[in-house]
Image (cartoon, rainbow, N blue to C red):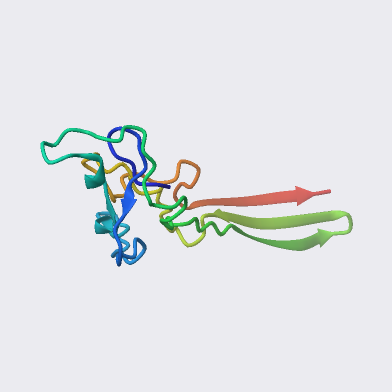
Length: 135
């Protein structure tokens, strides 16, 4: 993910600033002071160097990652010869951990550096209980 200016040019990295030294909260995931687009404007605030590539490298920011643990427990009991009873439980997202989406990387966005949504495929904990007769 790369911070971008309003003109879709890559941002400049600020020397001496570590982009991943941010507080790692949803309000500010990365160090937002580590990037600037000021090199793209002159003293009269007119855009210059349209299409210029900045000095920020690709993949500079490390996102929040994904934690997904699923678990299942099964127990079989013999009722009589040829008939068994299976008690089962399956849990999706066992620790019920929120999986955040990547932070906003557009320098001109009001949400720059913030995480505003969750991963679309990582929902809340789901528990399924079952009882099965096998014959």
